[in-house]
Length: 527
Image (tube, rainbow, N blue to C red):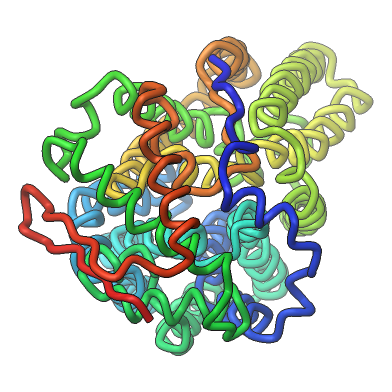
């Protein structure tokens, strides 16, 4: 379902394209991105740390002994409580993110995660450990939804896709640290072999709480709360290097304000019902839900949480060798994810997703065949082939589902439902993860390589879905994408207002609209 490219008709896109100065030569923008790294980037590190830590702990004898060698259902429950906590918190996430702001949501989620990590570390029994994991999962969606929105809304339009891609790629930083720590502690004869990795899980959250107050709030959120002067000052400082007469910032500010007005004027309510109120919104909802499922049901859950069990099934049983493979695979994932985050946003989104899904289908089919061959013959060549496919899987997955997921979601959903749209993505993703974490160890234990066939079937469905359903969103600003699915009349109205603001050559002196449900008043004045 391709959408016509109207980017050349928009003045803001034209000005962005004409800007040839790289971000690292812009002092204020460079400073903003450096602050974003330990704050927003650290959030995905938490998820990566958790996945890799749970992989590593399954090869730590002290952890296995403390929890009485968990297998099948119990092992699935230990991993899945993290996702269950996320599912339970998601209904609250848009309320906190939209009412309190992106910064407060990140701080709120980080505090909950710190409490969870402390409980997990101090666990005296199974119940205390899973409660800690539940709280870790409960806090992470607040931070992820707010941070992905903040990055997309604060970044200069030219770097928006790349910054959101790096946000997701930072998952591997946490994963590498966890893999390295568990490799170093797995030989400890006491419980510190698993308590040390657990307590280190507080580090990213501490970084977030420390640095979040040095980052400005989202200009779009400020405008939606009637704080237009603050928003305009932020845009001037970071998008125009302090030039109050910047033509680009005047036009960008006017576009944001007028688009927010049009969004709310055409929205029946800024509530959950808005996601199904129109045909365009329903299409967005379906794509966001699909992405949530696809990012977790593409086979990555097997290597993220149950790598040791997969390795055992192909004859690799030594705990040290398992941990070394876990660390090597995580480092490889970080390397290719970072490279792809810097390069993939330059190509069309739909093209990248097609390359991703077709590659995953071919690789996972080969992985399944090689696993079947090992199960039937015990061939060491088949065992090595499985390892090779696991390493090939990483860049294939990262092309689309890592490098572009949050970029695409921020572009897909207009501002007034953006937090809700990303929350829907999170809900389906966390629900899928909970299901996989609970079912995967059972499936691997009972069906072995035959269990992988279910993933091959779903990957085939992903290829079909992307081909028919994904619109193109590349090379346009967030405001230009706000009416992606709406009729031409709405887009023409948006462009006409943008042209009027450009001809006036000043920020709007007084523009306002009322949120029909909450009574929020958007009012902004010239700088």
